Image 1 (cartoon, rainbow, N blue to C red):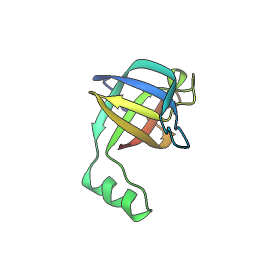
Image 2: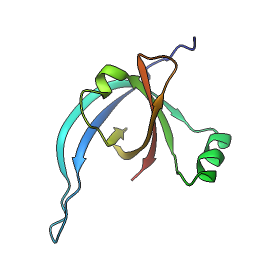
Image 3: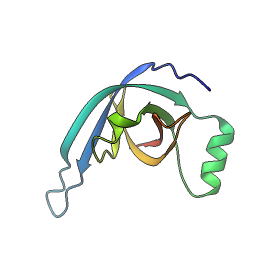
Image 4: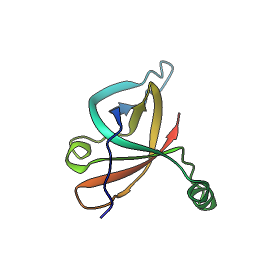
Length: 102
């Protein structure tokens, strides 16, 4: 089994996008947790692009922390990323997020 080193503090956010003239986003829920943040390899970037997805980083974190809310954004080092895909990580205790900047 691959081990994960949780190397960064990230903030998970559940954000509701505003509509109409005002268009302000509203943060409904927020949680700061430890995570394993990785850069994407070139082969993974190419394979995600071939299926019409974009990706900038991979984030591994504890499943029980992530499933505590309907999170759709991650803040890493002050930069906001949108969660593009949620999948299985190294085992059932972790979740892997593919995120895109913006």
